[in-house]
Length: 80
Image 1: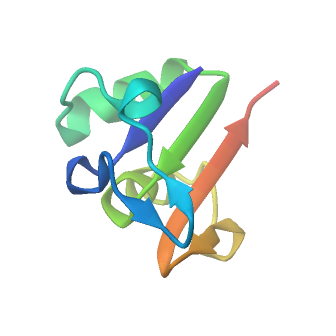
Image 2: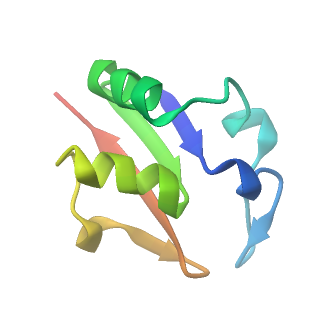
Image 3: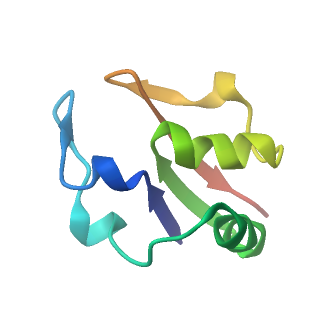
């Protein structure tokens, strides 16, 4: 599973949902590296506008499919 979030959201609580550092914190990625990882992943969990915008630009998801939590987009993607 690839877990991705915008770095400024790490450790924050949004509408009662903790953006847990143990789950999301890892390598800091630029857009190109994130695109590579997304293309190689079968299961993705994303939180944040910057992160989800990459998946949307790659046509892996549509903006309308984002779950909004406290005004912040969240995506869970599974590719077969």
